[in-house]
Length: 389
Image (cartoon, rainbow, N blue to C red; front, side, top):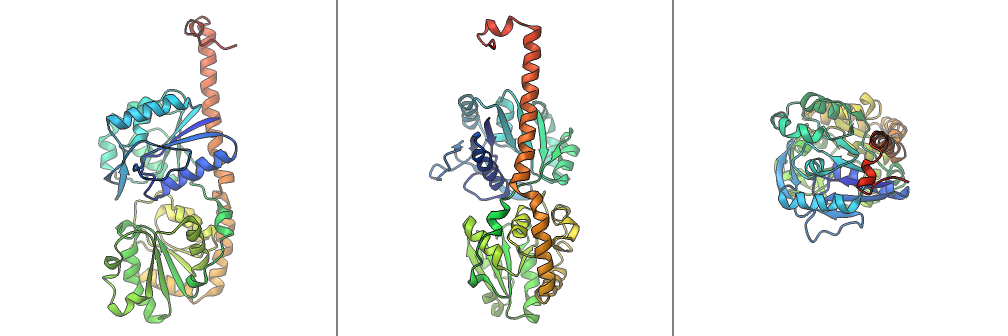
């Protein structure tokens, strides 16, 4: 099958949507499908052979974050050329309601279209205001996927229609087989995320840290991600700042080793999350997870059975929960075992097969419609040189 996938966000800025698209493309390539991904990317960005650049992206505030998007006449021309050259059996657009390549592809594409909605934002004024612009494009979509019930709810409430829920996927074995790094072991809390993006929750964790260190002064917080490190610790007393170690951006291999090493992985995100791919990665690596009680996180963690939850934005609750876990190796072992079993439902072997079933359904439907039209107009296709044998 010839599969075209449209990524809305800049390929060179790591994020959950980009990782999902990358892994999905590589899963299908591994099955023998012909896959091309169209994505915004800076000119000097090294790209995998299956990624086609749609040009430089620009930063735009979006869903409580800053997304790097690509839009405009030049982008539209590149979308049309990619669609023409690709001759895809199915085009899979991610975030078609964002002002980026997905929406442009919706307008330009013909044939079977699948769309995945990642965003969870129940009060999106922008999406409501844009409904009339989006409606014509979204009506062309053959099948809709939402990565969680909360992303599905956003779609239903703002844009109408419905979607099948298929979660984000993870290569579970990649994380499970990683070797721990001894330098990251021993009374460690872990955090991965953009340091200077408040909704990722690092300020909440920093606020909780003095209480944790007062009881367990040997504890370290390991932080992986890009951002201003000095600004991140400025709320901490000076004598505690050495207990925070910044690792900067880490490779996929080091991320897996990081998650295999820490005693507790903390996800203090405050909102705007529709799924929580990092939680799945942490469980895959066997890290006990402590997360804010966002609806999406609670769903991923099986309502607290596969990881512990604390009240969102409550630094005291985070500190108390972290102290309990650090002091209780048996509870951490229990969470590792439950998480490792629960996470199998998110493996690409399951998620990829479900997405492929959607592709097969829409392509079969398109073929059936074409056959019916051919039967009604037997001379029509032959007049255009398109008659089937």
